[in-house]
Image (cartoon, rainbow, N blue to C red; front, side):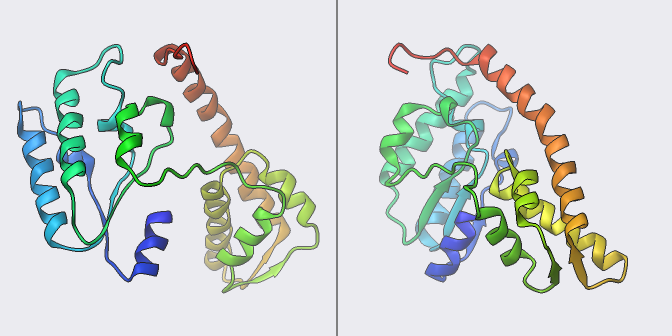
Length: 210
């Protein structure tokens, strides 16, 4: 969403680099493809998004590190250092602790997104559902149901409520529709969060200065 907003403000195309198409099982081919991508980036202005960047940006001394992935990261760091195209390179991840520290020095800015603050849920929902009539008489209940959800989760819940109304032929989104979608989103997210936390505890060893 940030990359899309940046592209819109700068009037540049948004191009998402598909990491699954970048990776190859053949030695050296992934780095070659990455080189070709940076060649295009240097010639075509745009906002280039590397989403789920931890797939190639993980710390190079991590246990279970694959040599080819390490070489790809080294290549990325070199290409990024030399990049002088008329555009932006955006990398996004939910697993910041897994990223190699050298990446932090290569990017001009690092933006952290915390969970929404009180009042953000109402703004997000009203903005996303501006094309619909809203019948919400208890925003405190909405805020409570949104607790622990990210901005993207709240937006997805609003979109789910909108789909329900459109499919039923209605035009007004009521508080019950939103509460149901937010509650469902929380129920799905909770076990996934627990799994992710447990995985981090098993795979990430904190540094002495963490």
